[in-house]
Length: 167
Image 1 (cartoon, helix red, strand yellow):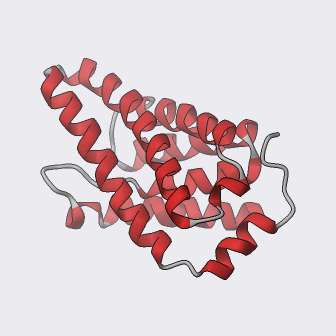
Image 2: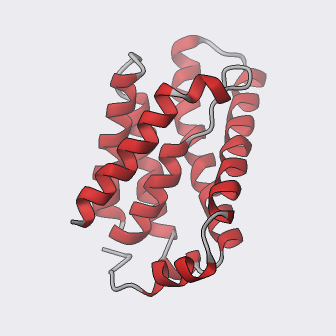
């Protein structure tokens, strides 16, 4: 049942990101809702399963965006592995702590993704760093907004439920 919830969560994040992302894009940069969902899954499932979820979500996103297959899957896999390694349920005790940890994972995801894309699309270093930083900060803003909508009781339920975060 939890895997159906994860599938729904990632599917909803990808659907909103791909279908409605252009409405929220600023100079071509969109918030990364998928990385927020993958951080939650990574926290709950550990790094082995997180890599599978990350790779699958990245590959699905590459397909939905009609982009080159691989960069999204690679970036999501690396970010999910890091999230499964460095995030634990206790790290998500407070929304502000969780949002800063998600920002670090989003930064790692963006460094890998945009580094690969910069080689393919021949971006200058200035454009590369601008895209990495702006995308990370935009994702952090959305994370703060989403996390502020979650009540403290829900946060406590999230980290008290039985699961092994480091599988």
